[in-house]
Length: 394
Image (cartoon, rainbow, N blue to C red; front, side):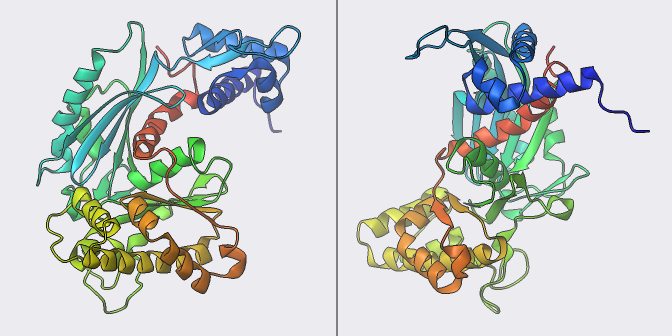
């Protein structure tokens, strides 16, 4: 005989659902919560009181109302006092932010990543950011944990993370390395930059309301965050999304993975830099300088952007045929390449993708901009709070 959930279990589920709704949608009236969650007014009132008592939300009158009668109280996330730290470890820079419940970026820091410094060795620099940001944290605040977005990351369910050789970090647990320098009392969770950016854009950005999307991200390598029916598609062992190693040019340029002709070799940073005369340097800034030079009329830069844009559309067309997404978002330096070559990308898509798939897919850039990775990393840290609000608070 199956026994249904207890009243306490139902209450916990409802607390999580209410806090999650306010976390995603921001200030919400009790009336809207009643409709959205399918609960009665007294239950919403009791749940709100519990969350307010834990310091997670506040309740008050709406700031503006044009309706007659008594306005419904509005529930707001305690963004200033309930927060996570978010870190983004990129090929040539490090970023950190304090992100409040509700997705508000409250404070941020950024510095260049020293050349040759392994990802694990960046932990002291990130810890220094935290010490600086802690000075502006209000008294009585609640820290829920930290999330880390890493470019070129492969996740495994058992814990270790494997990062591509360009990032200088292979076969070690980044979370464990950070624990030695950051507060270990709360969880530190690690995610692929493309994956967490896809989560952020789905929840708060360009892909709100779109449950099937692909977020393409290029730093040195090319990765994808793939969401299908509202859930991340990570594959067996968490290694999904390595679209940069889709072979598009058999026998082409050798890739860092050991294969030849990977998509990464024709749209990656080096493809853009090698295609432009005088394109010295490496990294994000060097790649963006080529796009800027093309916009100013430099012939070799224009040719390089055109070539990379053509291959970008080639790969996107294949992904559209395979996944049939409602949206493709171009993040990292692919944002600038896409904007500079949107016509070529769409032309490839129109000539290669199935009509039923290409006609409905939207091509977009991140609405959250460069904050997508930081906000997405914070979402990793907030998840355990949203799953069990009262258990996750002191």
